[in-house]
Image (cartoon, rainbow, N blue to C red; front, side):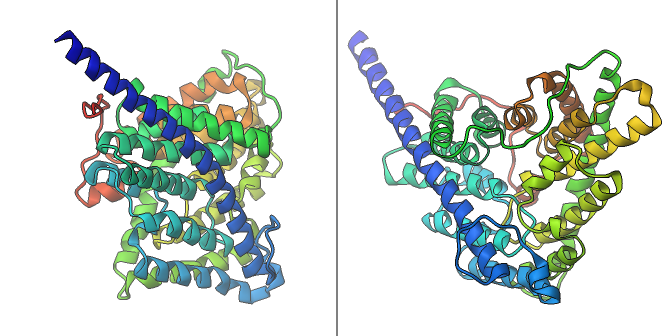
Length: 448
């Protein structure tokens, strides 16, 4: 009996070691996929707006084409629609809900073609001016990589789920340099359970991706902002109450996205054409405010650094939201994280400026409110509380922001939970009849 137990224990350790080694390899490849995606976005931006073949990092510039630039996002949307129609419908949207659905319904099995079609469609969408970031697509692409590896080799369903999460965490880390936030995001949105045998491989994958990123790319924080001071008791009520505001903002964003998506469902044309129609709107908004086009990471840094006036920040937030809502609801390929961070940072900065004007005696720090807004908006929309807090800390290297971030994000999450049954990540798949776990329990399927 003792020999049988020892034999089974040794076999389990070998399976765990194999899973961890595979996670390390996935972390390495995820970094390569992230760089390939970023280069592809740059390539398509150059092709669409500058009419040249180049991998130089540039921003979409509608002034080069004048009024014809309206049709650039529409052309990108048309190509994405064709890829979705004749390639795979799974490339539509921001990718995380689709990954969640595969985990919950299909034993984490993602078709191989998604590994190629998702980054291609996202690069075309963003390169043609789509108001998205690269993080959603790389999470979906990295997840596809992990799933495919899990299908090619003798891994069970539990292990495939872990490998899918490894790819997602590795991809997110490669873009932002936020390994701990990537692990927490995987736990909160993909693994749906918390135990060492699941999160340790994910942590290894993120650690490898972070190390390679530091060695070959940069060690600088992803977002620049001035240093902040520790929160005082006088500021505490304001920062906590701001969580209520951002929770309400999160509810409004989520409900508006699915409201516009429902409007697209009523159109008397095939869904293949929707991204093209949405692209026309993106092009019009881009003429009004060019900063709405493309990834827009600099917009987030501008909010965190309070480099904009109140009217400029609110105008950019409004037009970016209109563009993103229309594009995402049309079913094109793109992410949600960067736009949500943009809305939050700009609204947080704006709230700080208003409070400084109305109640200067409170000594409210505009930069802290922008940081809170960035994280609390994502926390309320995604229901990934701890990932939101840690992401803001890792992406800005502002450790003194921990206390206000934790409090405000918790309140934003609570408001969102009270007012919405589902999040921006789960509403779509819940509508299709998928039951998303509300609590996390260890999955007992990891034994060989």
